[in-house]
Image (tube, rainbow, N blue to C red; front, top):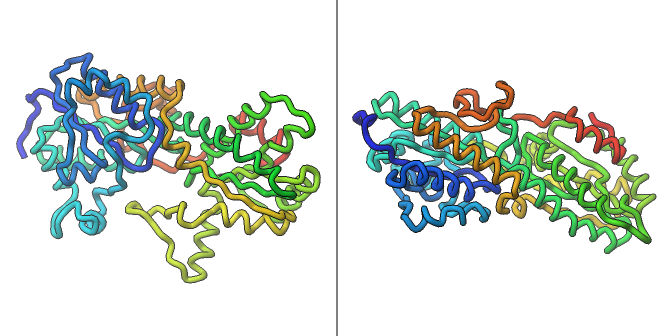
Length: 403
């Protein structure tokens, strides 16, 4: 590979990982910013994330798309598609047919970028997506090819360290709340109804907590007759960060069931996940995992596990488990998120043109300054702080101890 530092910038964009309400908008704001800087800068988008990069499958941004880029900011999903590909997982890349036997994914991706003449790569994804981009950048640097990589932090879990607020998380909480606003009315369909609302969140309970908070904001705006807001309230919230004493909680919730004739629980899909996996393995069941080694939580059914723990203990006659994750993560971004996405995209372009790599976000270690955060500092698994004041206040209002 030869050095191309003097070439005119050429931009590549990809989206990867699960969906979040920011992918389409991020692409739109990036295109808009580059066009305002220099409309002659060529932009291509790799289809289906790193799969498209490995296979050389991309679309070129046309003048028509540039002129209508803001349309993308009002859509959910990704117009160029996503995939879960780990560039350092050779076996998985071979198995999926993205590379041939004997090839190295990083080398294949690097050669494709060289072939396409891309000097700036924007990766819109979570910690896995952006750390993979960092590995790619390091690989190319050792082969005398200057690639600037600028990521945007997409995850509805809001669990990327050290970023204060990841893109799409506000919107996902808002739509999860809207989702439950209708589901909760099922409490009146049967006596002694237990409703379990499962939200996404592998290691971080932020989304579940924020969804409950936003739902309760909606709930207490309404007037009630014949019954009270308590019948539609959240009666328990279980997060990956909190400990669960099933017997103590069952006793508390049985009292709620006896008083209201219904109970509604919010859970993160990662709450008690270790216990669920341990039980599956003890039964000799195979635990499904993705290319990154993460347990596929949608396959292990945490909501059903919680239903089994509580139904009999609280005397539920009927149990309903509802999941808002796919509904909320596929939404178009709300006003709050669009404003944050635009700020991150604008700075991302400025950083890229200045040759500064990193993941753009509000750096909690530097007074929440919006900057291109160094890739080695980016990592997932950031936990939700159970001492956050709005969460403490909410738990006090619903009468659940914080443990």
